Length: 361
Ligand SMILES: Cc1ncc(COP(=O)(O)O)c(C=O)c1O
Image (tube, rainbow, N blue to C red; front, side, top):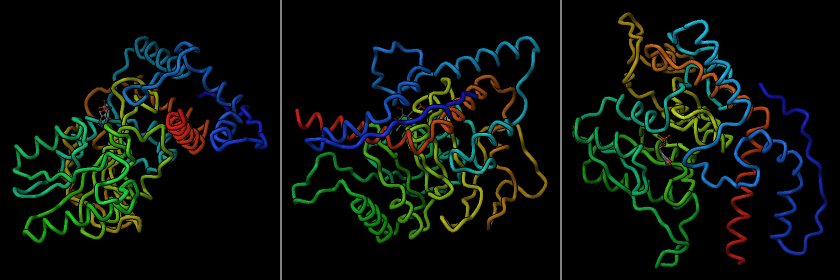
């Protein structure tokens, strides 16, 4: 594990002439700290990596761990049977998950398939989603439509600052109203609305569809909640237990800067005040673990105590690439050491600065 504890930020007092200048000063006040973080990455130091959203870049400590684990595995000719319980336990807290709710998936697309295709859809069920979903989420939606006869209903998302009627839709309340209204309309038509699925943020505009407001719609309407959170792990310091969604499928190879073919999948396995709705009936799609004895997979928890470890069941799948997932573990621990809240604040401020600077120019 890399030690970043020695890195200390140096403060600055603002003497900025403009808000933009003040923003720039805030961003650079910890420049020694961020320069040290940057020095851990192997891409040329003269390069600004602007597309972490497609895939990140493994930093040196992660590359080292991956190489060492591969070497050890080859020397010992070790297999990969198991459920990575120790590794998942090491990273779960930093991601705001219990270890029995955290799966190392293969990427976001895998997590979306695991989520959407493990639910017991009935013909005519409606999943309300958006017109800005990525293929990683749209594909399992389409498979579910083809296979089970579910209906996909899309809310059109705003893309401009202002709608023709003068409403500015880029606020959390707009999303709550738009999705509540759509669910109401569909139910008034006699439709069986069962779930909301959406991306936070979306890949087309980067809009962070507000998870608390969307969860409010789910709770008020007793809906299953499925979040395509491709860009959340490693960028946002979210606590998935507190947000309370049923599923969050994210990437390990984007902002979290783990190896390719890694992802973070949260599967709610307990009923907490953050989401008092019952856990949906769910069966893992791929697994090497099936226990026909009670508690059956569909006997899910009704309170704060899990009936069984769902993440173990989903994680266990033949012989796993243990070096790859240990390298992901290394990346997650490195992010915990830097401070996930600090990363989130820095990324958001950089993004705001970029937008303001473009507008200014
Ligand atoms: C919103 C969203 N969902 C899913 C994906 C697919 O990600 P992955 O390659 O991790 O499956 C992406 C990729 O950029 C994305 O932006």
